[in-house]
Image 1 (cartoon, rainbow, N blue to C red):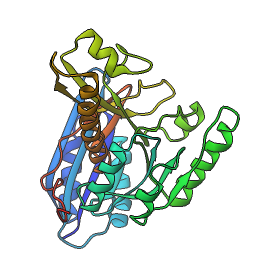
Image 2: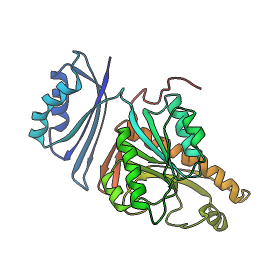
Image 3: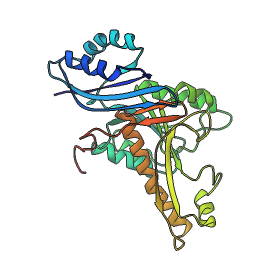
Image 4: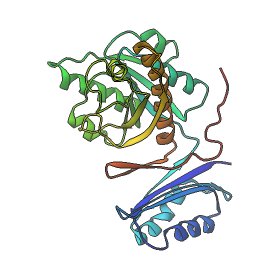
Length: 294
């Protein structure tokens, strides 16, 4: 039986949950999982509801029928087919741990995405990518050719029909124009030391200060460098006995995990932008299962 989900955001008001539940029941749908959040500070309401159609109704029919409900309550809404894989373009420079992790997770079905292209400003991972039958594009970026390079990047994204760009340790700053054009559709990963340790060698800076926690942050990209709405974070403990190189290796692992969790949440339509923050609902039962193990 096909599983769908409905995502809704709107100004907070009485009757939204009841209206949605009544609509789905009246159209032969059974709710299997639902999350909601009423933000008293912003006055915004967010809801994600998973359901199955027991009468064979398709998304187009449900969308058309729901319009009158949405207009009556002034809802922003989208219906999704939970079996559909989100098309993703991954961008990488010379650190390949996040790219390799994503390629593996996609191969075993642990992420509900299809990597439709990989873009890099270096050739390091060409063989790794093409050996998995994924198109690889080397687009070099300089101060002189940045507008042309970004136009080429966007052409790849559009030609591939991608819904999301993932910066898997892509070490180039995107222009304000590109950030605005892809608002809410570019996810980045970085170490969690910002703003404490900016610039080169953040792990060495952390080691020199004797920090006891290192970590990573995944967020949506905005024109404000590394200050976009946060999706996922995690930390691991380090001790005085570990070296700066240990910090780098441990940081690499947590970066890959945090990025994968952020993509999982986005691809399952669990993330809602809420001003400068996000609302991230828990994953639905069964959404972490993999097709295979190798």
